Image (tube, rainbow, N blue to C red):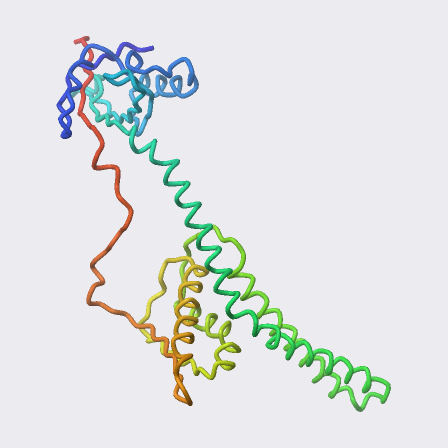
Length: 301
């Protein structure tokens, strides 16, 4: 290992005092050098080549003997003649961050499972009407196919009728396939990947899913999407789920209404009043890090 002892330490903003590290090296502080030889070999090669490094994490021991993880970044320092003088950098205690990662991943997994269950539950409330909706195009496919069989023996004069019937078969089959695909996209587990989404498309897909159920309940769904609604970054399946939940809840709420007048409106517009505000429910662990600045200067002239 190269001799690169710390020659200066500045107290971290959290009140920690790393002065005890002066005169020792990172490799002296680390306890994982033997365990992770490849990682340290690459880091040593970077240091000996006088190259900058960033986010190098190693395991050390705290004052109470517990394991702590340090992330360090350094930048080489040269004099006016280009001679290497040493490194200047910043180190931080990232133990809390690393320990929180498994918990956060478990939470994300649980949230994904809950979202999946919610989608399936919501679909259960509207899929009862899908059988009827699917029966229509499937029955039309059968009828058109039978019509083709009945016309074919008559001769070339009926070719146009056969062509029209075949076109109807294709159209009805595509309609049935689209219905099945809409249900499948909501029911299957998703990876919550974000992508550019047109809200008008999401609204249209949800309305198509709820069309038969809304008709059975006597609810008219009206949509209004403003022309200036931008493309947003999000998970289209989760957006469909949220909107479908709202639609089902709205239809349930109108169940107590007698007679006509059951109108459910879905509007999408750009609201510029709060566009510069952002709210996040995720608590950041970065602010709680213990950090300190350090220098290593060569004793050579």
